[in-house]
Image 1 (cartoon, rainbow, N blue to C red):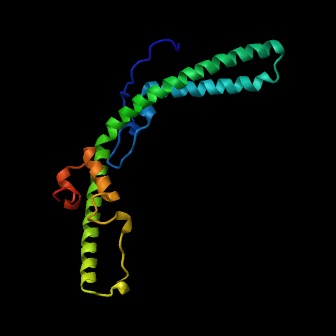
Image 2 (cartoon, one colour; image 1 turned 45 degrees about the horizontal axis):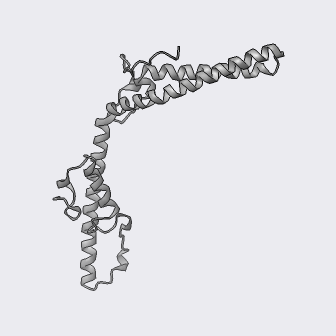
Image 3 (cartoon, rainbow, N blue to C red; image 1 turned 135 degrees about the vertical axis):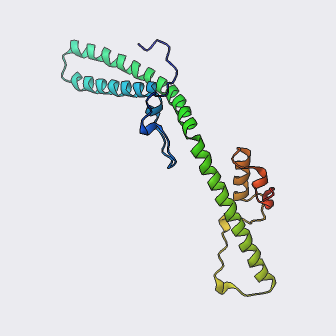
Length: 188
């Protein structure tokens, strides 16, 4: 049973609600996209239940039965290791299938995040410019309750956390270099 070559991951023909991501960002389960993964998880559960049942019987069994139970437990243990190894492989393949299904929505979310962060950068830059104007005019403006977003870093720092993050989005293909703020090497 376990020695045969495993079939490739098959996408479920009748896609359930669980397997079709929506604009709301639903993520299908591995079982929903891979019948083989679903079969293996069911087999794993069955093996665990069988082992638990035999474990409960071993204490009350006579020596001859106990020996047979121990042989059966060893066989179940061997099968569990095989199933676990197969599940690892199937999990990777099913995960790849899920990623293909959700990629458009994921890219949309990253694009929205990038746009929002660029807008945050612009607001930070405008705020910093205004604060610097107040300072240049020697205005004592503490009563305005300065609200520097230090966690963003300086809007002029090409190596701030925000700049590095946005540049990584460019490197990963989520953002065009021209869309980076000028301070970070873009044209926006």
